Amino acid sequence: MPRRSTRSSRLLGLVALSALALGCRSQPKARFPTAERALARLAEQNACSHAVQGEASLAFSGDGRRLNGTVLFMANQPESLRLDVFSSLGATITTLTSDGSTFGLYNLPEKSFVYGPARTCNVRRFTQVPVPPRSLVGLFRGLPPVLESQKTSIRYDAPWFSPGSYVLGLDASNAHQEIRLGVHPDDYEQPVERQRLRLLRVVTKRGDEVLYEVDLRGHAAAQNAPISQSEEEKAMGVPPPEPSGPPCQAELPRETRFYVPASGYQLSFQTKEVWHNPPLTPATFQQPVPGGVTLQESNCSD
Image (tube, rainbow, N blue to C red):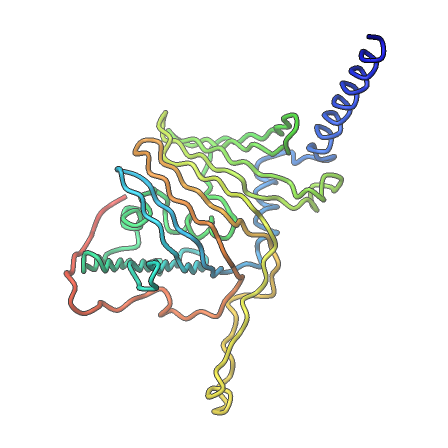
């Protein structure tokens, strides 16, 4: 019995030491004093990413429906967006474009084309999430939508056995937002101005109602999009296209999940590949009206 007791005590001691080590490691040596400083640091480290382009698996559930597909996405600051959804056979099912002014939504199964101003209510026709185009572009770039707050708060949440995170609170008139920012695992000993932050979660409320939740995971560094030219273009002396931003290796999330509690809608993007600053033209975020479709103008208001 004494020998077993000794072994149990040693085991408990090791567990306690491991828990203590994990708990300490999950807390940065220096902490951001205000929510504004933390948000400014996140924006600073992602400033080189003017635009992103990628391919992702798309999954939607809600109203008893489940949809899956592949989506090619392009997002250019401040609010230009393009989403092309393809079937398993490679056919384009839906295309959404928004250039900050004009919105267009092509739906092949319904043979329809909806157009109107680039407002939250129109983009919601595709996403089913009440996120403005500017905020959606920011989330693809790893940046949160931010309320114009009248009051802010910040604390550091450090649970046992899991990495901690900064919890930011932003309060405006009849609205509240909670933003969680993680710290890069290699930066716990760094001063705040050198800590690399990761957007982990956003919860936005209006009154007591949760409008939407966003969870982001799998952060990893991305590279600039490769510049490609055909042999014919090279032979004709056509200059290669210009990237939409400077060299960038900022981290980007590889999984983004939206959830709307009121409706039960859930939309997730599981990124297969993603690039910073691809070559872009204004036409990227516009689409001509396809032939043989029913036109519908949508002048909704947010």
